[in-house]
Length: 341
Image (cartoon, rainbow, N blue to C red; front, top):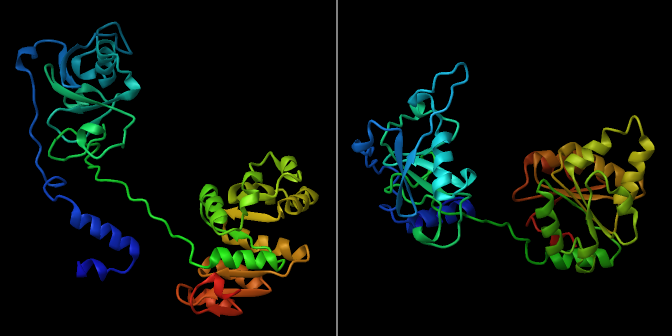
């Protein structure tokens, strides 16, 4: 456990602790394959065996014409799709939901592959599980995702599903209250982040940048709903960097449209997501051009242009890069937004 605690980041500690808790035998990536299985009694046929839902299906490949002549395709030139199509008729399982593997071999096989490419012979035993994958439950029988390497055909392309890790970087204590203090003093707090718009909106609501009363009156700009955002019913705007870039590219041809855009998105609450360093700089400039006095917080090299452009640049003292600190007017020793207020 001491070794886990000594790792650098919280994310590393979470993953390392999980690794300690895993059953090394159950998730042994070095387990050997159980070999290849063939029903020799079908070696002279056009049949394969497909195991599915604890049943064995004897599937016959229907010969079809090749693409360049009238002769029937050879066995090796048939596609796995031909097996899947015949199996669909027997099992009623749509091809789109079939996940095929060669019994006893590692990895998934695909509909567009030929039988010769895969190495499937008459009488070959295949295994089918159902997709899309279901992740509910904690036991093998509760899900249909390939879990265990020692069950040789329950995995996809040599990977073993162990679990999903969901991590969050929560707001620091005191930040929501600090944002409310800013707003009560007439200071607008705008979020400019590289996060996905959905994530950015959720975090903005957690820290009161988008107030609870305006949560249902928030509009995400999609490139076509600017008139909708003009409405008094819209009190908060979320703008993604890609859509912002599309607007900015029209500045030479239609500067008035771009000016109108900035005026409209300059709402009581505003969030800019998936932004580039250049866009951060332009956001600061747009607010200044509309009479705003701008303070910018940041910690990365990419933040330095906006920090320098701002009336007050505030860099993080702990996680901040040297470039960001040199570009700032003030350095936060505890990296806490609440300390500014």
